[in-house]
Image (cartoon, rainbow, N blue to C red; front, side, top):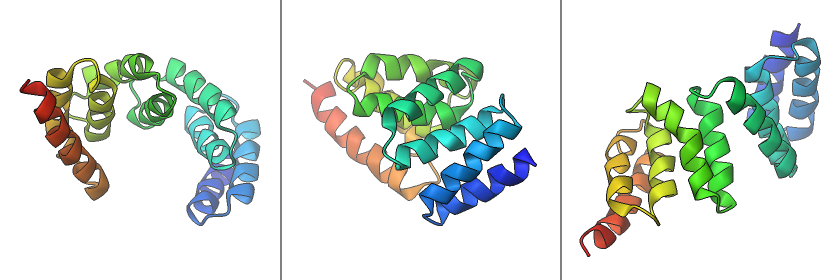
Length: 154
């Protein structure tokens, strides 16, 4: 039953019905309390509901359980980047990139995390980020690479 709640909850989130999606994901978590996929989905619902601190706490918990899973790690890293916690975002992404060095979104967020402190290293991460199947990620990686190139050459 937990899997059904999860599927329906994620479908409701995709359809824009955040309240119902969240309710279903909370039901799914009650049915499967240790399921990291369900917790990750619920973190997205919490974020969309404006409960960003609770979403961050849940993402931290999920990341502690599955540090090499790129989806929750990338969501956690992005949340940390938005808060200015670039060094922590880089720590979160390190296990993902050690296990999947070419993972595009993890590379994009790592480039963002390193942009201010190590532009040449950040630029190396944009190479893999530009291979993303997501056109928005490819565009962001290319734009970031252009900016980093200006600072890497100084």
